Structures are given as structure tokens and as C-alpha cells.
Figure 1 (cartoon, rainbow, N blue to C red):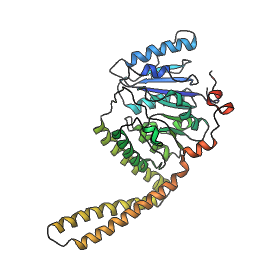
Figure 2 (cartoon, rainbow, N blue to C red):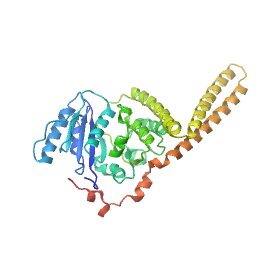
Figure 3 (cartoon, helix red, strand yellow):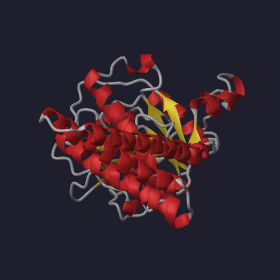
Figure 4 (cartoon, rainbow, N blue to C red):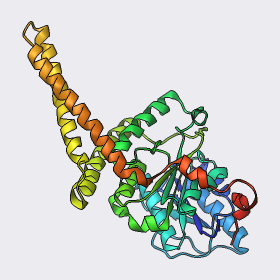
Length: 360
């Protein structure tokens, strides 16, 4: 246990035979249960998970572990629970499988550590603390907050991450949250049980999509600074299809969030300003382009150009107003690092995370 809370860690694996064993082995001792979920890897990930789980469970229990569990089986006293999907279902499905099992086992806080070894186990306490203390329902790492934390991040990764961060702010409503693709997360059991997990995508867009669902559910989210860590692992993501899928997912998420929160449950003028801003800005830009084409062709494009410019300007102002209203409506759902660090216990003595750890 950690600060009187039962902690679980979901370790996801797909083609991670070279790393997943080490990830499981280095999960801190205060973690009560590890759910190692293999998403039907074509490599030897499952064999590695079973071998490491058997050894760790024997050390933990002092005897040989029981039979392997499938997703539908009940819990037991093993520290490492190996789970394998019958078919490949996607990263989000693996996380959701772990969430469901952990919630069913009565785990209070559930973290996620991917099987690629990019998540430092030594900072797990920093990731789970906002949830353990009740300050947030969901916490996630952020590699973009401090310049020194992204030293190992390539320009390509940083640029792509920054673009996804901007788009995700619109979709999720968490305007102060960054690095949405960061999978080092923690969530409370209460939040898991409040979410309709079946409505959240099974694919790699899961991390963006769950933030939107958390927002609609009125859950508080915390950003935790962390450093980017990259090794010899190779990503299984195909970036062309990934960007295409996530972009469409974010657009659908944005529209669903506005409809659910600002039209169905209550009314917020932000939805009107968003609509006016989109129409005015898009229509104005198209009009300016048409006026430019007419001017190049020797025709009069001045009058139309002025009208289009005014429309685009009104659209831009409307969009800015919508963002301001939207951000204000969601401000209380974001736990900033400054707010959390202000009342986090100081290191050492009774506030030292290590000192508050107890192992069942």
C-alpha cells in the first residue's frame, strides 16, 4: 500500500519482449498488484510476462502461483497478474482491460506503465500522488512543461506533440493540460467506474479520448512534470494513419463534448461563438482567396476582399471569445502543478513518499 491506498499498475505490452520483463521487475514495492496485459503480441512478450510473473509471484507468496488468469477470471492474491487478449485489440483496449480488472479487485488508484521501458519507475509516486491525495481524479505526465525535461525529445516528436496538444485542448476542454500522448498516468477507481469505457476508443487515440470523457464526467486532471526518456525501443505506431485517425477522433470528441455539456446538460454561449467563429473564419478565408484570384485575373476583387476580411476578423474574434468562455467553464477541472505543489508535503520526515509507503 501507499499512504493507505491500494495501488495497481497496468503494464501494457505489444512487441515488447526485450523490455516488458524489466518494466515489471522494476515496479516499486509499494504497488499492491501489477496487471501485465499482452495485446496478443506476435513476438515473445507473453512468454516473458509469464516467466517473470511466475518468478515474482513465487517470491511474493512463498509458493507457486495459481493457474493463469484470463480477462473474465476472478482475482487472487498474486502480485503480478498476467493477462493476454485472445486477439490484438489496440493499446486502449489493453489499458481498459487492466482498468476493469483493477477496479474489480478493489484497487484504489491505478497507474499505467507501458512495456517499452520509457516510464521511469522511480517517479511513480509523483504520478500517483495527486490521485492518492484526492486532489485529482486523473494524473498524467507532461514532458513539455520544462525545457530541460524535453532535452531527449527530437524536433520531430516535439513538433508533432505540440500540434496534438493544441488540438487536444479544443477536444478535451482541459486548456491547461499538455502532452496528451503521454501514457504515464494514474486514475482513481471512482473515476474508472464513472466512465463508460466501452465508448472510449481501443486504439492509440485512447489517451486523447479518455480526457474528453473525463471532462464530460466533470473529473479533475493534474499534469505532472517529467523528463522524456527514449532508448532502443521502436514504436509500433504508423504515424500517417495515426495522425489521420486521431485528427478525426479529436474533431468528433470536440463536437460531442460541446453538444453534451453546452447544449444537452446546460447552455453555454461558447457553443454559439464556436459555430460563428468557424463559419466566419472559414468563409472569410475562402472569400479572401477568391478575391485574390480575381485580382490576379485583372478583375475587381477589392470589394469582395474587404467583406471577406471583415468576416474573417469577426470569425477570429468569435473563436477567441469561445475559447475564453470554454476555458473559464473548465478551469476548476484542472489541477495545475503550482496549485498541487503548494500543498504537497515536503520531502523528508512524515512527508517523504518513501516514509509513507507500507507493503502488505
